[in-house]
Length: 586
Image (cartoon, rainbow, N blue to C red; front, side, top):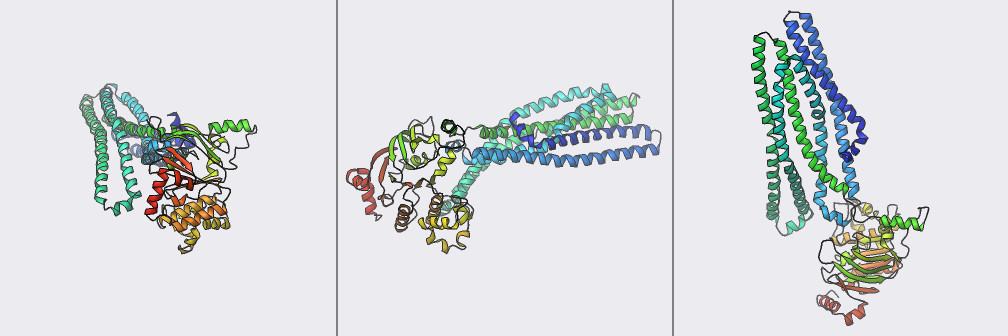
């Protein structure tokens, strides 16, 4: 609760004003039955028309004031609820930006989307829909009970019977419905996952004519969500009939005993009417308050899921970098910088989960000098992509050490380290916006000359003029309106524009023809001679001119050497070379 209230701090004014409006509205509504009793017992009994009109006017004024206060409450509550929801979403999103790949893998993307949207909406709705009954019901309950005992204490004893019954019913409903709400939110995660997978791979689905299979798969998770929701809400709706049963039973009892008191002269008709009004207000207050409990129960489930995101500690931090900076510079103004781009792996071991039995990478040791070009090749599944992802600390090594310029990579801040390393991932990603917008991800303030130079090296200039509006062409989500090869070249140009010390190309020319690939390699060598370049590839033509070629096999280094030495001495390299030669790739 303390953590939750911290997000309400910025909306304290709206929250306080909403509560004041709710309580004031409640007070004016509670005055109305008392005025009505006076009209019956005094005005009508004495046939005093001016008195009746005066009291009627007072009732109208109270009703209008209540209406005005209710409108103000709605505005303040909407501002408070939506504001708190926006603050929680912003905090969640900001926290997600600090996650490493391993943190994201832990939750899964669909679950994070649900926690950022559906769970926050649940809390937001609980505030906007639950604040009024939550603050109104207790006040109305206690005041109405007090006035009821004041009117007739003997008749008000009926509350002492009705209240415990309602409390017991509510307890059993909340106890059984809470775990179902948790299952319901998990079911929403599964629905989001299926939808996300289907939309991301819609071209594959169409190509393999698997629409029926996808529909069946979606129906399973959708039906699971439906069944779970039905079980949860079928229990929750029992709240209403149970309260109505007790309410009508209470009213009948009051009419029975109250009517008897009126007949014998111990109670007036106006007092009984007023008493019934308060009875209805008390029971309605209890019913509204029970609904608040159900809203609160559901929002607790959502808040627990959100808290898991907010409390998740990033697997990769700058703690050690900050300590080193203090030792290096007492003014704390300078950061350790990557200057040359030399890289060294020292007995590096890695596995994705600490509980995993086997290492993905085992005893990796090699050195890359500044300005060298290194090729990495090996069979599928040999952890080539995993190895290069360790350099910018997208994952943290399990044991061993990676150094850049002689410093362990954890001595650099993540921001500076990743600013110094440009990585074109195996899965190319372009964002909605223009070609220019995507290229400027590499360098926000890049000049047109710098953009054109990067595009020339990456051979983007070969097709940019064929696009509708050149650099101002709008790209669809994920770059759907450019080909795979064009997308790869745009991603390479974006990385070059960053002017990094280290450039990592993770199988990023696989969709490019060999002639274009040769031009890109020539441009990198000629235009960026001082940049350290690491090329992960499946084709030997992509790396045969590299200064060193590293062969990975089953997460271990099988051999390191030049194209000539490996072709003469290494069996794995020979197999890859001759199989590609036979296939016409060489």
